[in-house]
Image (cartoon, rainbow, N blue to C red):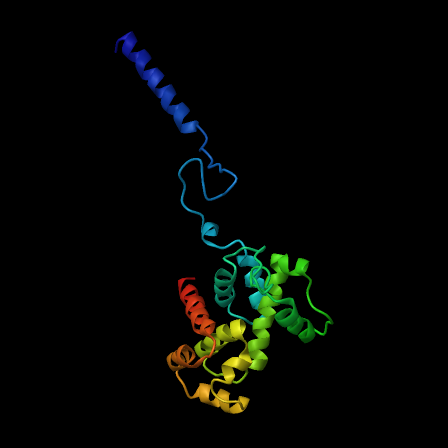
Length: 215
């Protein structure tokens, strides 16, 4: 073997050894973890919402379907904790301090109602909103047996009140619950579309249900 050929083989061997020993490049990110500087598999966390851990904890503590909480947040505020409606509903779940907020405080044995500052805090807002869903399901809508029908009823009651919903069946609560239990979920859904006096009720049920199905 010639001297030039031998030298070329040695250089090639050293280059290959250097490449093999080069440390693996780490993926570095911009300020947002969903935009890597170099390509990388999408992170599972990128598919979750910023408030997912809060809704998970609140839903577990209150025995409420987390998907329902997340769907209501998306419809109510689009995930904006600073959102305030014309009727002064505040935060992610658009809580009114004097109604849902006061009801939750009373159920917890507390006096008064949450402040605007409380309701602008995402964790407190979600905790209060989810506790209110529990009140609707365990008290005002108690007795509805089918879980899907109960979810539909909870959605409507969250927007327009449980009393207004039950009165579309009967002024007597026990009879209204019995009539609801005689229906399929699909029949109940259609009843709300046809019979609820507030046009918002049917639209809200459709919106939240549509988002719920995508989660």
